[in-house]
Image 1 (cartoon, rainbow, N blue to C red):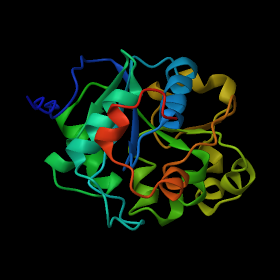
Image 2: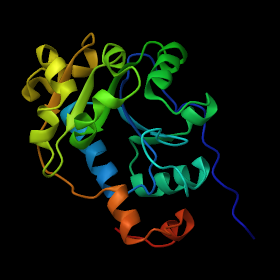
Image 3: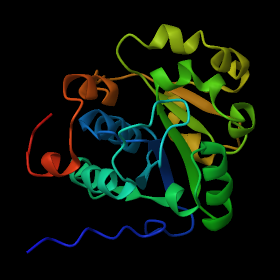
Length: 218
């Protein structure tokens, strides 16, 4: 008998005043590096939850060969394996590929929450290429989690330079979710060098259901 796919709610359960980290991406495939970033954010930013926002596809990347949002979300649910990490297919629900549109909708549908956007240092390096990135930075605070070999390039990027006056010391990162944007922090600490791109390069034919049946594959 085939197991019925898990049905993801439009938005994870939440309550007013909660501090929630948002980690967006294709999760193609999800891996323990995503979990690593989430656990650091939970601890250093004093978050109540982290939501993984599984995107229909990154407009800056080749989306050919993507598995369905539902398949990648199910794989993400397996990999995250933490009571404070929730998986959301919200972007598919509102039919967008852009973080700007995602946040605009979230801030209307989930008022009263203290959001902070989470990204790896490699994403900050290319943040200036995101749609409406400068306006996005004024919507929610964001935290950049260090990744191997990325810190210098990230902190020298156009976006980092433009937003330098709004950077807070990582020692004060716990207040970030409560700050009025623009506000951001670069968080150093244990780093993971895993990436979805590298994993696809090793196994371009990865399949979510194979992942779900292979505990500890990463």
